[in-house]
Image (cartoon, rainbow, N blue to C red):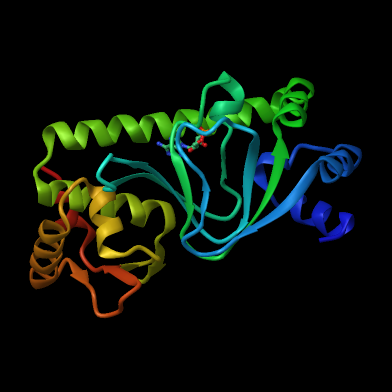
Length: 230
Ligand code: CMP
């Protein structure tokens, strides 16, 4: 992408929206575009943090892997989301593994340039802190779910969260388009794949969900789903 197209793109990214034209021009000089194919690992947990990534298109999952290869999904990230900031900020190795869920395009900034950028842009540092707070709140909620909720409760809360974050309203219904496999969905909800399938079928039979398309969950009865979060 040429410098002008990159600047036009940056103007639409909330993280950079306060930067003026000169700063956007400087940003376009220090970043580089990187593409990854669906399923490709962007970096592994414990790697040294060499760069910060902003997703220009596609989806990324942030996971922790057990020694026998099972994965636990910490977060799903989309266009305009960023990742890889933690190890740059605290100098520790990568806290988790990042994997492309679809073909993705990212823009990356190396460690030194990113640190310099933050030092000269307090507004940007505050925006990053804002996102870190949001992720910490989410992580706290996940711990609470695992500690206190039943399996149906965990699935219900995960669907509610997906609906709130990325659902599209369609009259009384909420449509959630996603690219997750059942295994990935189960991992986010903190259940086994078998339990997830059973709970989804129960919710479908009770008229809470419509699951007729593969990459879509339609939330039909939000009130009833909320009552399942116990
Ligand atoms: P870093 O530790 O450099 O590499 C892994 C990245 O995953 C981390 O930076 C964050 O950007 C991101 N990350 C870690 N934990 C979460 C989480 N709970 N939700 C979303 N993203 C996360």
